[in-house]
Length: 322
Image 1 (cartoon, one colour):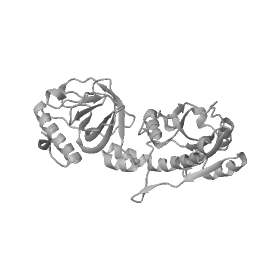
Image 2 (cartoon, rainbow, N blue to C red; image 1 turned 90 degrees about the vertical axis):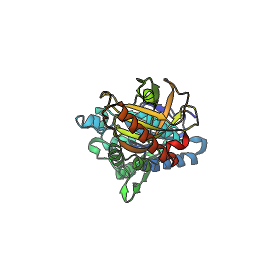
Image 3 (cartoon, rainbow, N blue to C red; image 1 turned 30 degrees about the horizontal axis):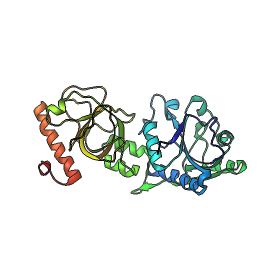
Image 4 (cartoon, rainbow, N blue to C red; image 1 turned 180 degrees about the horizontal axis):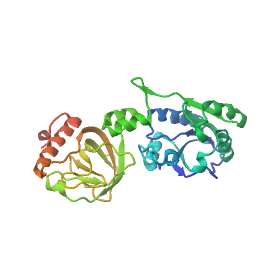
């Protein structure tokens, strides 16, 4: 199945009369709370059979880029990664509406009527019950319900999902990601946090140390804390999953680089080469990135890192696989 059809604006979108069930929100991270909203849209669209379509309307950039340019909210995922997650959920259409200064000035009372006018086949909208919209964030669930009946729409709202008594939110996930609490991030997301990109050529230092690596040049808006992680690698178009240990950071032992690099050492040999696209699953945080006195000290630590990662996956040490 292809990724969801993606358009940059709902203006002029032609759905051939199919009933559109539209989940609306920023959906940064597409966490369990977001998934509950989207699942409601999916189920309703499926009840319409071939005449129903499930869409997601999201925004880029984040409104804070326009409203708080000196202190914007860094995003957990870029749009292309978000679309991959939405695809896995079964979403058929993504409307990525540009958030502009003009959009920020839209009065809340004009939002829903304008949406229905532009998307005549819109049947229902799906939101979290804390969703806010319009100029000054004055629009809320009660306004949507008040307007919906007059223009032939239904509004479905979903209460916030909690974990251990606390709301699951993008804000909470951002804090955990920065703190290196990747396993808690995964629990809140409802899937394993991942990177996606093409393997790039490296300097060959890992191979000289006895730990050859695949290198991924990956620099998201909100990077995880620099350090060593247990990971899994899935080549594009393949079902094979390769366990690995990886360092994400600026390689301070050799030279601090301004652009982070994800260096991945697979436990088993593969034919993956530069140019190959891979998906990398972040499973467990092992330790922070640090500077070592020399390459021998680094080599010893990498061996310990690999052993710890193998215990995470296999509960046995490296020597048992020699």
